[in-house]
Amino acid sequence: MNASESGSRLVKGALILSAAAIGSKLIGTLQKIPLQNLGGDAVFGIYNTVYPLYMMIITIAAAGFPAALSKFVAEAEAAGRPQESRRLLRISSWFLVIFGLLLGAVLYVTAPLAGEWIGSRQVVPALRASALALAFVPWMSLLRGYFQGLHNMVPTAVSQITEQSVRVAVMIGLLLYMIQGGADDQDIAAGALIGSAAGGAAGLLVMGLYWRRNTRAAGDAAVGVSGGKTFSQKHDHSGTGALSAAAILRRMSAYAIPVCLSALAVPLIGMVDSLTVPRLLRNSGLPEAGMLAQFGIYNRGLPLVQLVTMLAASLSVLFIPALAEARYKGEYDLAARQSQVALRWFWLLGLAASAGLAVLAEPVNIMLYQDAEGSAVLRWVASTAAFGTVSVITAALLQGAGIVRAPAVHLLAAALIKLGLNLALVPQLGITGAAIAGVAAHGAAAALNTALLVRHAGVRLSPAHLLLWPALVTAGLAMAAWAASTAAGGLVEAAAGPGRLSAAAASLAGVAAGGGAFVAGAALTKLLSEEELLLLPKAGRPLAALLRKMRLLR
Image (cartoon, rainbow, N blue to C red; front, side, top):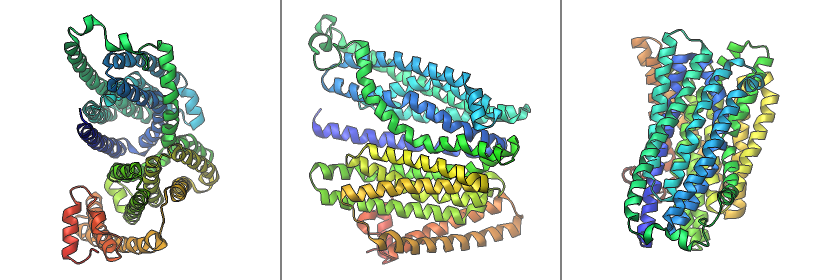
């Protein structure tokens, strides 16, 4: 395979994986809405208390070794040692499967202790249900790492979509069954967490089928080669073929542990909330059921913010390859300009999302969650979209510039800020205090990343482009969204009465008007150029042509 074919294969694989990641994350994020609608705020609160802890355990079990396996398999395949790749998978599988089972057993046994830390015994069944996933997810993740090392992204993409689809289907099915059977909140939440185990089992099954097909193909190709001996067995002195299993595990661990530590920084802020907010609410005098319901209300806005940050993470692939190529060629000025464009774009998108969600908080809350409880808190949570978006893109740009560990360290610092502010604000302000602490924590991570990008990547920020013009555009967006929302909601309410229908009309009209005002305002203030618009996939070219006809594009 020549260099151009290899590069094309990598780009195609990255696109497949990005599309699958968007699809699976979209399914996983939106499933929280029917969970709240069917189970109520108390079940929603239990689920959102347990899920960050589950994600932390899954990250420990399945983040580092699949990445390490991918690296070593890619090296072995490049050197023409396919048997070595399979040996690496066998050895790491034994280790990670046993490790996952041990972690699952520890989580199951210590669930009552974790419930005491959180301040609610109602989370214990859900914690134990989540432990079941550790029997499947680590092995599934390892097989994904193996195929990624082969530069075959299709198995990972198919298993991701399958995992999330089965997880949500099982969760909703169990919710309906248990609610109809009169189960209590803690058992209903546990049923929702069983969906994670079902999804992991389905994803593992898909990866197993791909592995079986791969093994058969490799067996057919190996017939008659070297009398049954492999290249790695006869000639391997530089790879891992001559190493013992213990030595291979040590070498893989040296790579896997830093990757795992960096990945742990992402779910850490959510875990801080799980371990502090419910207990602080309980200490403030709320009964257990009321405390869990309040925590559920606090989490209403998080799926919407996660959609924005997920979009930011997906769109970052538009900039990162160009940035890496420019730095490889020594074109550092070009890399700095590309970073400035990316930072400005994502700051604008984050601000637009925050302003729109803040203005439309009440109708969106009613449309998605049936009532207006916690709309003021949702406005605070909406503000994290702007800072979270900047944090995502600056972390990617720093990694593209070779600064890998700093973004993880900054997230750890943000988690400490969240912890301190939770302790200070939640007893006084309740879930509003937790939301304010979230804004401060994500803002700190974004500021630290941006400062480092300015210092080490040559990025120069214009106050007008960073503050003045975005503020004007955001204000126009907010006014347009409010006016359209009020008018549409009023019309439907007059015809059909108040409720989710009028809230949906208000929300959708506000989003449409706000989006239009954002595009027009960004063009009029010269925040958009044709070159930047053309970076947008598919929609960029027709949008640029439309704005040129309207004479809104510089």
